[in-house]
Image 1 (cartoon, rainbow, N blue to C red):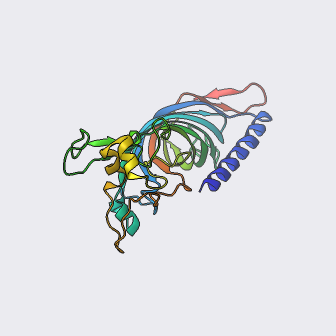
Image 2: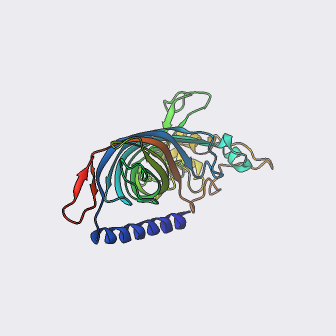
Image 3: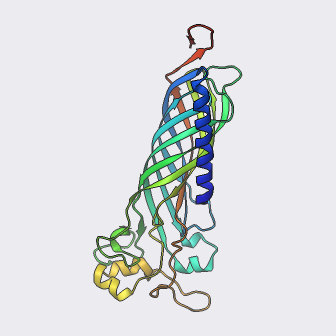
Length: 297
């Protein structure tokens, strides 16, 4: 998946470069900013959702600002929010059901993208008022995985039903001060469809995947730690949230023992935003002429 995303980004940037070079030798007919909100859903894919289930959508949204260089090429900046979650109890995989982990996290994100329109797109045109488009770029985001404590009694001051931050517990044996970063980057890529309502207003529909540089969106990546060492360093709550929820497998073996698989560290986590935006166009359309360019609104 990461190789595919890199290839998509390279192809997009190649198209952007060619179009920018062409624009230098011709006349750009549409140029300017458009800004507006978007709303939709978010999904997570990773160690707690290995078969790309789409059964737990959460609300997502943000503010998008796009600068149109011409009728084919644009650059956008956005600030976005989404919630992600996953539960082993939803899986059909026996190992994941026995592992019995879960998590939820808020995602706060800033994203910069290049966009390429498949068709010439002009605000206000009667003929060229819509186009599918590709986009690719980078995101910087913050996350903080949590899980519900479902034990029978209060443990380390946490009551049943309370959400617990997982990173400070070092659930895979991380030493204090060496926990994973909760602010990191992602390759962002996807596709969309845009069309005008009138000259100023347009509708944008998009689906964008984030291929992250972390495997800890869900607090799951490697193997189970030594329970005794974890209890000494982090307490009883850490042991429970790391392996205390595990169930016996069908063959009777017990998960949660030291160095047994907890996740897959070779495959980093992903999340996805999909939504609909309403944008207001502040630019203009420059009509081609042999002399000075004229503008129309």
